[in-house]
Length: 87
Image (cartoon, rainbow, N blue to C red; front, side):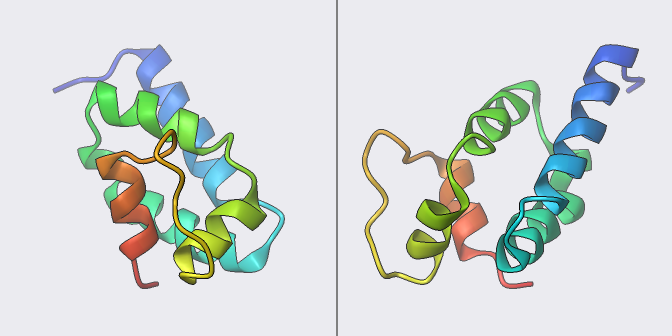
């Protein structure tokens, strides 16, 4: 499957955003997950990942460390995979 320039640009942008979060732990967690799985993401996964990228680092880190529950409005299969990822 050959990607058109726009989907490829979205993937590259997502990888950069995932690895440059601002909190090193999130760079490792989210960036590591995205780097490992990005080539397998569907268009729906990419759209969900773009939504996930807008979640503040502090919130995601507290969910990943089980200090807080993920609010139902943020729950998605992809987010569950991200939070379960071990770098």
